[in-house]
Length: 257
Image 1 (cartoon, rainbow, N blue to C red):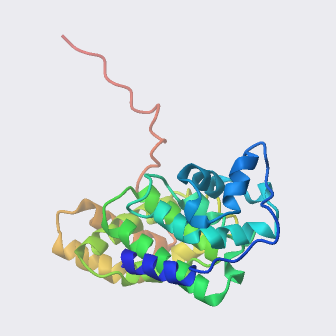
Image 2: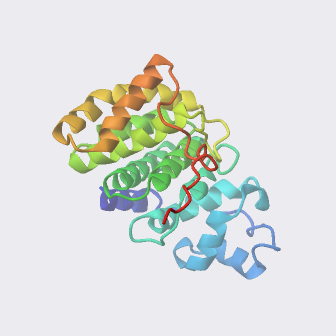
């Protein structure tokens, strides 16, 4: 799925948009020599220059050039974020594609389709390969920020088949449900995100989670996820203490001899 997505991105972005003038950016953060490289052949941009561009905020570039630079470098960016790229969390970088940055939703339709195909592959890999929950949730937030919509990506996760996907979905649902019950759920960088979308979607996954719990009766995460979903639907509070609430309330007994 990932290889197919990369091949499609290579095809769609094979003729990158041209720039009508040299690249202009913040020379305090990006040397003039790197700006010249960014304006040349996208395939020849060194990895460290690409990394700096992906991580730099949109306000450090000319507003009209910024989306063009992203479109020119997108196949490189996808590989950078993928399983054979660097070991980084791409969520914040992907969020730079939002409407306050590269404005991904206004790109030509074939380009959007190719990038979204790659996003689906990245989410699938994140769900099934056992990586940290923080990586999965941050990745979802970054993609939702870029595309301006969360629900299609939740629906994609729900449609991924297989036992690894079942296990990943249980872990994800438990993490989100407990945070919602503790009133501690937030989107860290996507300020337009509505947590209620998560709260509404989670109960729709109860049948799949219940089936997993039946197949794995010793899995405490699955059992607790069902409890959390029931509490959410009932509008009740969390049955578990907030992790930090017992910090000073469980002193050790003095030793006896």
